[in-house]
Amino acid sequence: MSRKNLNIGLFGFGCVGLGLYEVLQKTPGLKSDIKRICVKDKDKKRAVGKDLITFDKNDILEDDNINVVVELIDDANAAFEIVSAALKKGKAVVSANKKMIAEHFTELLQLQKEYNVPLLYEAACCASMPIIRNLEEYYDNDLLESIEGIVNGSTNYILTKTFEENLSYDEALKQAQEKGFAESNPILDTGGFDAKYKLLILLAHSFGYVAKPKDIFNIGIDNIGEIELKYAREKNLKIKLVAQAYKDENGTISAFVLPKFVSADDRLYNVDDVFNGVITKTSFADTHFFVGRGAGSLPTASAVLSDISALSYDYRYEYKKIYREENVTLTNNAVLNVLLRHKKADGDALKHYFDKVEESYSNNDSGYITGTISLSGLIAINAGNTGDRSFILINKADKQALHTEKAFALAN
Image (cartoon, rainbow, N blue to C red; front, side, top):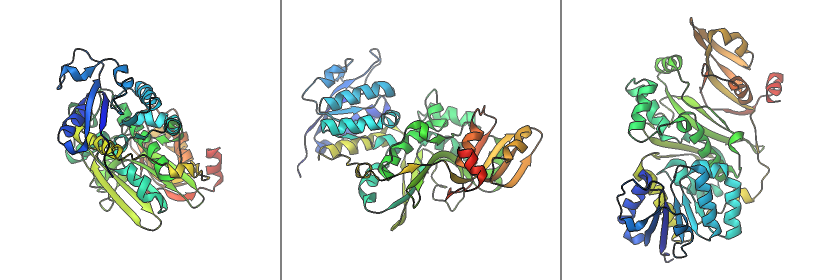
């Protein structure tokens, strides 16, 4: 099959945009060239000639010679305007904006279908790691049971520095910001929202379920305190921010983002620094493990480059799992084994949310409870959380739903 010549209009020229420009110079066989670059800041010096730069989006959107739009900007709302306009113009699109894709998945799906143009977004999930295309192609025939992993490089970097170098959370965060792994306002990463947006995309390609951000419970790493760190070190565990989803035999899906204690026999244990790692489990092939860099200009640019290469062969996502319209539902009745850290005064009241309490500890100020609780119970406890509670998953979620009266009351 011969390759198409691609004329690219690029939106955004930050670290990933520059990385893409650099890797394209090293892959002449791709037959792809950046024709225009649209940016906002008129005063910033660029590493390319002025003839490539424009400040008017229409210089790209209205140019019939540009057949591919690559969107690499931070603003999710502006990104959706650009991407939707490009699709309506019949231009193929590559995007790395996970927030935009997660919030507008249904609309973007419809636009691709209506205007018969592809939208690819491998870089939106795990940077250099090719997880989406594998979920689309390889796992179409094998029955996928679960997917879990570290999908946010910034939080993984912070947690790695906290455990390996005994840095405080604030010191590790500052270092991540200085290296460009975390934004000046890092809550998108540290609050678990970035991981949630990625999980929403992975859900669609794993199980054909299109969720909305409000449907998925997420807890980040910003409330982790000394008690949890001490617990982990005493038991030779690490803490990782893990996104996971699994499907039971009834077609019911449980999906959430939580910090998790991982032991040395867990494949995610050695996924450190800015690396991402994802474990898939299927009915026939058992488990597969993907690992790769989850942050940085060149790793992310490599995923964008892969999508551009795929477009040169007219590749597009088929969304077969979505279009099968299987009766798939999302539930909050998953059984979790967790550690809950709390203020000392709240301990007795919080125990009532647990189906089973295994361990309880308190000092002068705070304490923790370990035990079994439903996801709906965790959501109830977290409502109105002012930072004095944290939740760490101790082990993998149980596939069985709670059938106790307590679980039923919490879910309703």
